[in-house]
Image (cartoon, rainbow, N blue to C red; front, side):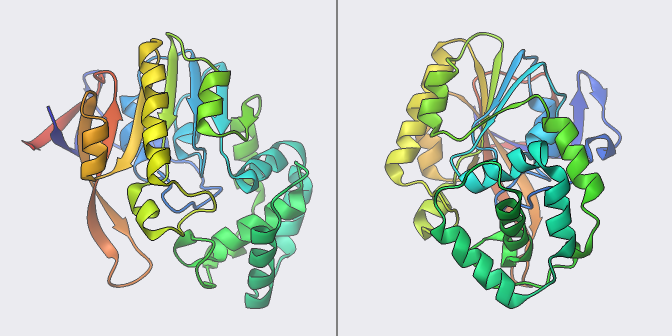
Length: 295
């Protein structure tokens, strides 16, 4: 059964949550398609687990908000993202140094962005490359690296507290730079696992230029096959996806819910647009939501 759900009133283990302030955490990468706001809703839906695997790391909002377990893996095919998190762990002082001294400059932004596009191989960790990447994300319009320069005010901030928080959270975590299929084969799913997947959306497939590593239609199908492996092996999973007929058709055998969210865009036209997204699970969460209507 497909349900539309509201995050306005929610119960966690039978208790109403009066405020979501306890989920507050800094954003290291304000990643396009990141789940900073949506993670406030999704984290209470996570079941008890012993191993946590995040397949498409991006900004890691889910990982940073949830309770950390003793065994964690985060993965991304984008080596710039992996290099950033590895630099946070291994050379945070140099990363902070570079970020604090980089001036706001359209010329620097364009030079850095071109270098990131051309530099496919990175000797990880590389804190200067990580600083350039984060600089470009922070100064990109709508946080898309291929978009024009934006005079984002948060580049003035002191990075120390934010990055040290991230290092403390991600320390001891295994960081991988693998294709999702290879990741599932390497960390073979089992009972006690929780896998969170936030893949490139179908709209990104349509547009073709949202991410450094986009999905085509075959990738969406490959992902469904990987998810089936997790399910058949006893692992639990949650997937965030765009509200598309293709998603409904691919994952019709699982627990699909529709969440309505408002996003603040960078333009007047896109500001406060209400958008629907799918949340797909192979389990029934303990958290109860106020239901709007069935679809």
